[in-house]
Length: 228
Image 1 (cartoon, rainbow, N blue to C red):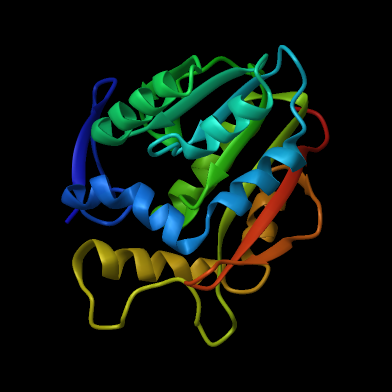
Image 2 (image 1 turned 120 degrees about the vertical axis):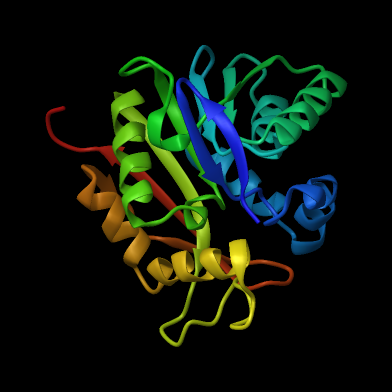
């Protein structure tokens, strides 16, 4: 089942973080069980934000990556975007408990509601596989647009081996899960880094890390290349 939300004058389907809206309260439990915290810590280290930098997390979910960033770098501006109002509500509560200020916007990765060149760092964590091919390309084009010329994209997503094993869903699953599995097929081998490069980025070699359970994650670090 997909959820539907409003984006300026547009109604659009989206897949919640765990596939169904009623599972959102379990998002942070899954985050812990799978061992995603070290992935986020590595993403923050790789991004190396400086005081005054603006950091955007596209598909921020319940705000774990932004919270990790804010705890280590108190003087950066934190912005999160997600279509899921319930996830954003949880992100806001967690930010307040941590004593962090962050702007949380409801919207879509394919149409980022921010001016050109307005961020120093853009994160994307385990959301690329939620999108179909054209939407993935639209996301990357938007990220390149909102990044400053010397900005940095740090993107993490599941990596599938050539025979298709990795984070995914059983073949008989249908609906949102079946759709997500089909979209995951784009993540075989170095497909993610090649897609990022095609969007106008210079991409560093993929960093592969294993989750506690559930497979492997590839972390991509990329900078805008050439003239805008």
